[in-house]
Image 1 (cartoon, rainbow, N blue to C red):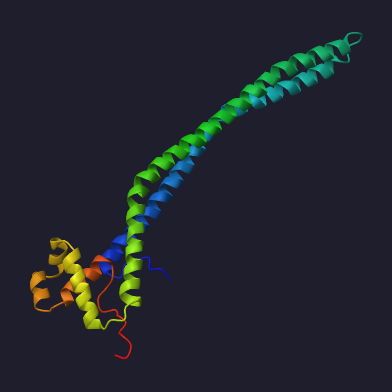
Image 2: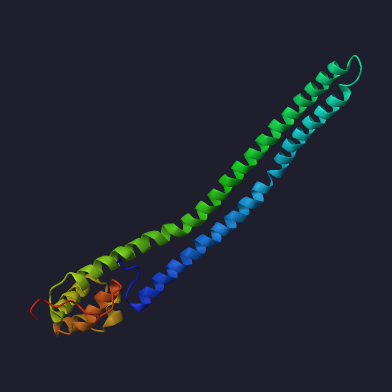
Length: 214
């Protein structure tokens, strides 16, 4: 199973805090953008009202035409004229209202997506590269230091101390030992090894596999 977080308490706390903050940030903006879309899409009621008004106008024309259709002699002719006139006018209302409603919904969706994309990009472009690099570093270090080696603990400690001395900055070394070169020269590898393990998110003393037969 891949390791999601560091073993070292400080690094683990930072990673979990960053993960939690990211989930909160994404959830917050998802909720805000959902409300934004609901507000903007509500403006489509204007187009919907025009479309429904056109449908109502057509229905009214049907009723008037039906009522006048019973007029003697000219009733049939008047019925057709009324229905045709109301139908032509209502069709324009339905078309304009429907188009307006669709345009508002499309604009609402696009604007909501743009706001969400900007909000998430600003955060994730900093979080994701850092988090992915941490996952790769922790996984590779765990495999190389905990699972793969066959060296005895003292030899592994010396190798880790050597790597720390040659790889870490002076500031990182001084966090763990006031005399990194003196430690190395005198064979005191424990603090340097601890510095190397801390740099990749691992705790010291969690059991390095010993070589066979020892």
